[in-house]
Length: 361
Image (tube, rainbow, N blue to C red; front, side):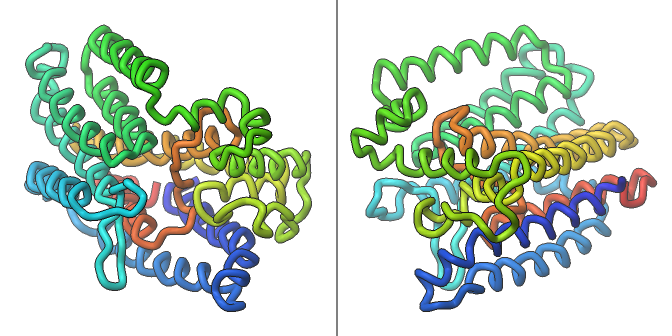
């Protein structure tokens, strides 16, 4: 099945799921307007598809010239976000009149683009420490560091996953990457269990029922998510029939939309959505493998693998497989600017496919 067809199926299913998950919440919190969120998301989806199709006609090789500048811009935006005042102590967003966005989303694309650029010009030296490991880890370390102190743990983990995967596919020695992951794991253990970083979320992850009984605010969302998933069973309660979305599950149209999907469509529906994501990633990697040049190959693989990693992380969060880190489900969770940016990136994948003579593969 062609990449574009799979993508459009996911987008349509995502919009239907968003309306089902959001209409009750929207009615309660937006003056009886059940269509508040879906109307805005459809507008952004249409805009995103138009941009995606436009980007797909542009030769992706011109992105070579913007790799370093875009990385620099993303660093500036991340720094600006850190300096902006926040009532919650979280500095993830930049808010402008009529629009808000996360600089980490731009940094994610910039990282993929810059890594693809560097791998393409250094592909014969990727086994060396000085060319195939050190510069990549320096860039990855700075990017992850800026996102980590927002604080944005899920964004940091996602960037690490994308970066290490691209380095591995690009030819970096596995030993270097294993040592890096070991050091990262040790640092995470130190921050969580010695310094107490995100300790409330870790406690909920270990024993959500106990945390819930102790009236932990962190536990409420996880418990309601598990209630939703458990009540879905094999075939689900039916589209639109979720009970947990009626003010039990906080903001069901955002990070925890997959739990509403599980409740309404059951195990079968959840598996079908997972299969759609798997097909999208597989087709994207196939496009990358058939690309005639290293830059196009790494772009297509990096951009599609980010979707796969983010989807896996989101599903792991809503099932309490990993701690609740606050990460959206691509093409499903509410968020206009992030949807437009993601569709634009899929346009780059389509550009690689087009210029490789693969059509809409």
